[in-house]
Length: 245
Ligand code: NDP
Image (tube, rainbow, N blue to C red; front, side, top):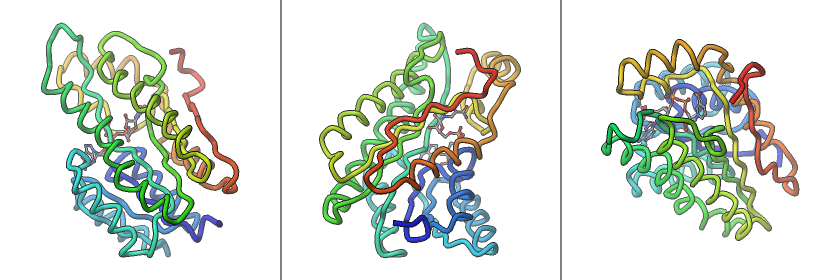
């Protein structure tokens, strides 16, 4: 199936990697369905891409709400007749030392980074099984394999998504593709979710200096989607060349 025939739904497409992925895929001819909570950003992106000839639909989406995720997936079918790829990208990274006990932020990360992906699987898998094809692209992080102080819970959610993706691949992989894309430090609004001002400053000024453009991750996602149906790119780890960890 050519890229122009594919319908790709992207969660968390109002900024950063999700937005860049919508741009790259729309430019390559895919029909793109974008979701996030900030609908004014989605509307602006959709109208910009449509102005360039892209085929784009958007819908408000909160991935912590199971019914919302189901409605988002159904919406792709209503607008474009089918869904071929679900890019579960929505995420947040409020880093903090565990001893600060920021339990609300832990819960939020579990809800968005982990349960949001599970709700995506639950929403899209039956349709993929019915049509005998489909692809899950899960955007994790290098933190799905590397743990550093302040990132324990964030890493925990990403390790979990990596484990679930591998299990999913083993169970449904004969006809359905499962791809993990694990970015290193990438330009986006992600560090703004760090609530501790000093930690946020450190993250932005020290650890987030050599950044990939979000488009680099979008190109990796497009590469995995654009392979023939019998080729499943299982994992892509993409770091800035200068990133050590
Ligand atoms: P951004 O903060 O720029 O984007 C995060 C996106 O997630 C936004 O579109 C936001 O939209 C969306 N989002 C957050 N909460 C929800 C929710 N409850 N429901 C729906 N959408 C939601 O950061 P990135 O682009 O960097 O993040 C994208 C993914 O990349 C994340 O999973 C992140 O963990 C991962 N990643 C990023 C790295 C980086 O250095 N940037 C490195 C490694 C991984 P809205 O607020 O409008 O709902």
